[in-house]
Length: 242
Length: 74
Image 1 (tube, each protein chain N blue to C red):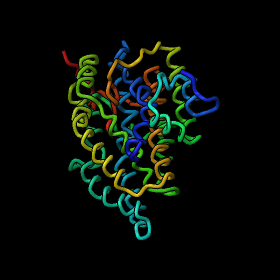
Image 2 (image 1 turned 60 degrees about the horizontal axis):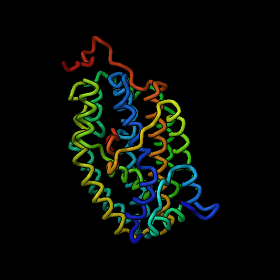
Image 3 (image 1 turned 120 degrees about the horizontal axis):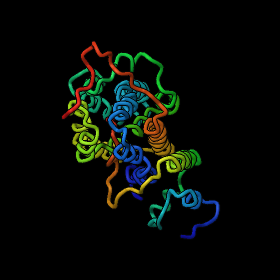
Image 4 (image 1 turned 135 degrees about the vertical axis):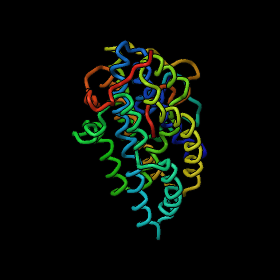
């Protein structure tokens, strides 16, 4: 397997079917309408942490860049990519807007303790970025290759009857992330990665997949209430489609 | 499918993570996985087995692309 990006894809292929499994279960679940906001709220912790994690990786890459060509190349990529992820707004704001359209109290979501597996995911990534190498961020970003697909987002809207406004970012990223993933593969193949760098990127991606799968399966099993509902008088209660 | 005993390929095949013969270059990638990578993959398999007992999992459809039902924004 000739390139780092191809080797990474081969590794993640081993978890590909598993990564899609919780979503398929959600689509089959009779309580999909009740569970969907919980499911999307669980994943939103990664969405909300993504830009801060990239900014941390950028800070570390700048500090290392003088005598580390991988950090230097990573710095250039992150300086271009972070503004793309902001979409002209505050980090994660658009995802929060979508959750609020489904009736999730996003103030409470951010104020209460994180689900332990999401805290482990975000904390591990911070730790590796600081104490191993900032290239660890590319493992998280590689998961943009596992972007949602418009067809199955439409199926979820239909199945749940939840307001379409709650799915705007999923539909947008069904298009955007495919391009981001292609760019990331070009970056991976342009950096002078050692086997240790490649292992860290793969470990970061696999760990992220494992903890998301675990959390989503808890949600689908009804074992992990994550998203508090907005108070009825806050005007953010879900409006169901006819 | 027969694989050499004690290899990554065998461990992942025994766990049901590899269901078919892989091309040689892909086998080399699997054999190059670190113990940490293998352990994470096995933990994913174990978690899915639990879910299978509860829900009865169906395999993905043929040609299903990566992330087909992955509802998360990266």
